[in-house]
Length: 104
Image 1 (spheres, rainbow, N blue to C red):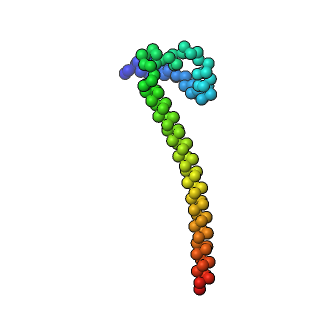
Image 2: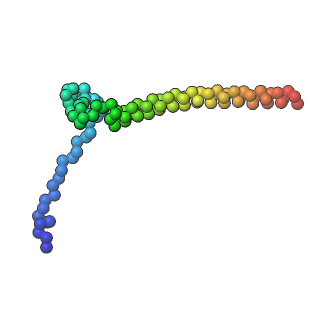
Image 3: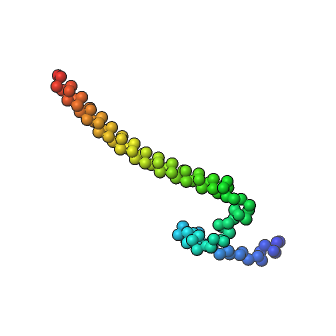
């Protein structure tokens, strides 16, 4: 018989706190002093930040967002052009039917 396992009480851990909201994160960043480690970590690690992975990822994200916006604008233009072509096609079919009716 294993006495050790029966006598152990189960420890109940407190529940995890909710993650901060975007507004709370932004408020924290805005209140942080310029000397906060988050802002000068590159200096401490010897990187100048010009070729860092963070900068590269930021530029990639910015390019992605720009491309996404341009694609959404192009999609809107294409939808308008499609609607215009549908209207023109229906008009053409109507005109063709009218011409056929006149020739009979």
